Length: 291
Image (tube, rainbow, N blue to C red):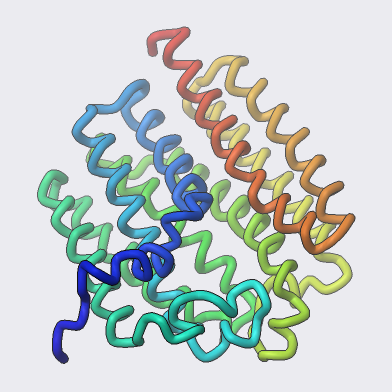
């Protein structure tokens, strides 16, 4: 395969990586920071924080590229995605695969600053990122696979800092998985009419008329799991105050989603603030208590 990537075509590659839409970076970064602060019981080593933060940007970009590669024959049938670079033909499939390989390679270089146990865990992250885009053809649960992928930085963070995977990290992992399925179902609701025509599967289609209630239940489970994480980590009331604010944000999202497809998309976007709230609760606890 001839190398086709060209620096002159960076504007198209930037669109393919969706760097102009950083919401995905935020939704991946906040949970990773939750885990880093909890594993370090405070501010983590700055080098480690940098490695994980850059890794989030690179892997989210790689995920967008492979997602659009997998959907290149479907995106043209969906109003919201019809003008993506692969769908409109401004980037070739070969370029997309090469860009995905480059981004994963750059992410792999970051692993040299981590221990070998974390390196092994990173293989799962690559597998999840690679298979997620194809799941919507075979199962109504691609959002669950996305949740598994978006949560995998958590065990990696604990392994990098503590060299172990305590029960706390798995409750945190499940909380983030439930949260991801909830907000990505809002996202899928935006495309539901087009997805039905194209034969694409999603939880938004599976849950049918009960979709909003199911999202609320997933968000409730998220809060309960995060609450138990607070118990295990012995976090103070400032953390639980943040969870109360999250519950209010979830109610607001529900009200938005009831209005229209545009409301569903805004509800999805607003989850960035939920991630920020949880992180603020964790970070403030360690800042105030010092432990």
